[in-house]
Image (cartoon, rainbow, N blue to C red; front, side):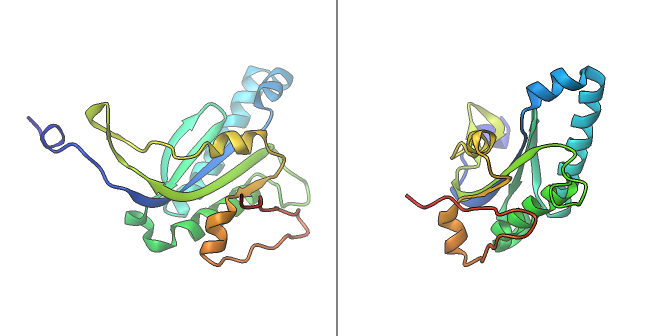
Length: 174
C-alpha cells in the first residue's frame, strides 16, 4: 500500500484564492458563434494563466468561463494575499480593463484569503483543496470588476484606493 493510503490527511492552511470569471459568457457565445467564442476564451485562459504563473500561483483549474488560482504559502511565503491582489490587478490590465481601448473580454476577479484544508478527500490518493467560500458566485453575480473580501484586506493593512480606471469598492464587513 502506498503512502497516501496509509497516511491520509491534510492540514489547515491559510491561503489566498483568486477566481476570474468571464461575465455574460453564454450571451457572448451566442453573439460570437462557436469559433470566435472559442478563440476569445483561449485568449482569456492564456492571459489569466500567464499572470497566475508569473505571480507564483498554483493554477488550480479552468472551469467553463472561469480560472482559479491558489496562492499557497509553501510557494509564495507569507505574501500570498498581496500576490493575489497584484495578480487580480494584472488580470484586469491584461484583459484591457484599464486600457484606453477598454476591455476585450468582460471579467470579474475575486480574491479571498482564509483557512482551507488542503488534503485528502474521498480517494485517499486524490489531493483536493475544498473551497471555503463561494467567491466565484459572488464575483459572477456582482457588478464590481475586482472584489476583495474586506476582512482580510484590512487585517493585512493594505490600502486599496480607487483609480481613474474605475473604483473597486470593498464590501462592508458584516
